[in-house]
Length: 492
Ligand code: F6P
Image (cartoon, rainbow, N blue to C red; front, side, top):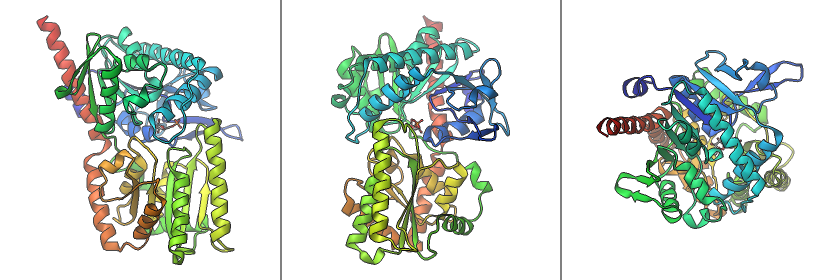
């Protein structure tokens, strides 16, 4: 907020994302319930938007979303303390199918993640993606109070949007943040519309990634496929008379986490979670929390647990693995298949290694509120974040933030961006079940002093590099660009 007031006075902030921060759903008794979705993007952006005010434009997917908006499709949020405007964009079933399920999640999602799921590209999906990006561009223009807003475009759903905004609002600052990895240029070249995607993104003033590695991959793709000039020293790309800064800004979470204030002690959380999921008092509790997605390595985690039981049979009966997986994109075949496989494997492990009073795996494929998730983190002995590939992964940071008792062990995939910062986690390769099982054993047997030392250091990192710093550094870069642009105009 201070950076905005000092460096960009009067600038209007507009956030654009597919996922909305608050979903209004109808309840069975005809009421309306409010759901905060399981989304790293939402956990990161929401505190920022709450602090800065402005407008957040998103797809209105909740069954009661239309009933709570005013005649301009707007609603003020958060409900308990309204501080910004949520502007819903309505999509038809065909648009949603082609743009979101199709091009974004069957095309770009597998293209950008190393999870060996083949991307599917359909002409009709591309057309829907383009049409929906245009719809959002029109909404940005309609919401802009003047010609110079700061537009924060979020994620792979909107690769064409920055160019569309630039054409309509040439003086806008467009900061695009790509929340998922960017593949190397060879992999990226698979996409039939690769030049269009790059052209769209190069309408941005700033292109942000979680890691320098992914920023470099992006620059290499531009270098290979576009008539452009790369200024490596300035981390900038010149294309079509416009300069785009390409930087890494590692995303993070709110610190201190607002909802921690309302949570009970670690002891109380442990007791509650163990009661709710029927976990024996003397068993160590491992948790995994994510969307039910094939990039998250859930099956690989089950495999590592089985490997632990085979290599160290004394652990059978002494460890329970609780996997929470919020369903998303569930109508797509790859996600349906994953869901079935997870249930099947969990059942198999329970039959093979469990008994009447002991089930080694508890798999709950349901959405949990943020408060319930934080309660789980606080109850856990070990948190497993073993994604096959991930831009950042905020579960790792949330687990650390939740542990003000400075206990608990984090197992973290080397293929998640968070592993570049959280060096005191036990870093693992999720493809290597033997290695993961040994890391699980190390975590299960780690003494409180070592846990304390590792957790303390990780907490320092997350506290210092919190989400306000993430947004602040992008806004400072934006302010520099604006001043340079204004200066150029005056001297021209
Ligand atoms: O990880 C990529 C991402 O878009 C996040 O930014 C977001 O948290 C998550 O996927 C949400 O996925 P969906 O909205 O498709 O359920």
